[in-house]
Image (cartoon, rainbow, N blue to C red; front, side, top):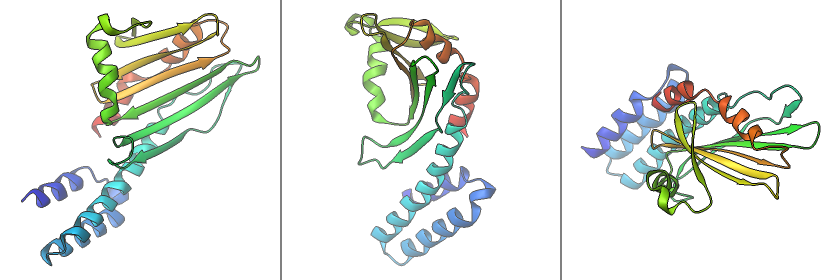
Length: 195
């Protein structure tokens, strides 16, 4: 019963573009299950889930902002981690460089158990240490700024499922971190998390 529920859930999130590979893999998993080959069925199901997660990675990469004037950006990178590695989840990032040597990196991690420590900090400011609570376009976050190093970061948690980190080095001001954080379209990111 649980196996059929997993198949139904995976099929629910399958887009027509993925239909061939994902549906083929799900049908193979179902056939293996019916033959009593449970280990192989689970392996095939994990393969189907991986195909879908690859599409999620591609979608989240498109949500990383374009560089502002005077900055350049590297191509967005992304990966998915199996549950056994780093707690699972999806990770995408993009690095930005200004002509005068400033650097910013935006990273989004979703559906990873590693988020629990950051969420605990947001819910209990007394244990935050050097960070301070901030709000970026209505979303809660933590700012850590080291003026002597001209570096810092802002971490934002969306819907208790995604951690967004905007981190910079060699910055003229911490305002640069906020400028980049405000370029994130949280509404589109939240929508993508539900698709």
